[in-house]
Length: 248
Image (cartoon, rainbow, N blue to C red; front, top):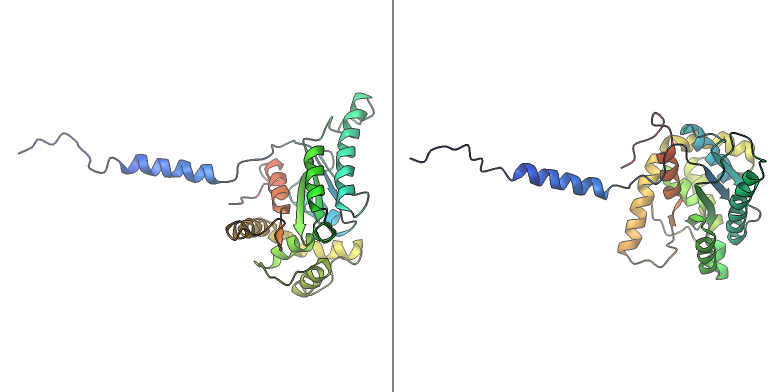
């Protein structure tokens, strides 16, 4: 009879489980910002986008001393990228000259341009936009065909193929929401609370849409798609811990 020396035939299960857990954690999106980081977000839209981010930043308790959201110089996304780069450079210059308030950051840690792709694709200068952003160190939170697709993901999980341009996308959002949302600033402010509870879900949906287009080898920029979720994740990472949302 063999003496029992405490051998456990299942000894391998615990190390394997630990290894799988490490891999699972490694696959999760890593933090892209830290609390206190300063953001500059320049939007192509003059109403919908600035109002949306105003409400989002309030939800995350991120305030203007660290985050500035301003409408871009013009609707051409190239102008928006240039405007973002120039605003970021101006911030550093004003700091060196001692012209900033004590609450103002010396520089922006994150510079983003929130833009649409429909005109750039139709007019054939989308690659120019990407190259310009890379050269100016401006990150693109772009949506195809437009920002309304990001809003639509707050309401439904879809890769619908009838969003042929910005006008079509705006019509679909208005239809799904059951009301207007962007005629003017007052209308936008009344409508945005309807979207806000669902932005973490929109982030997840945008990631799934990106995976869908990757698997389908859809040419860039995929229609419909959005990269606004990357910006929103980064903002969430920078939020105070008590205000931060858990997004898988």
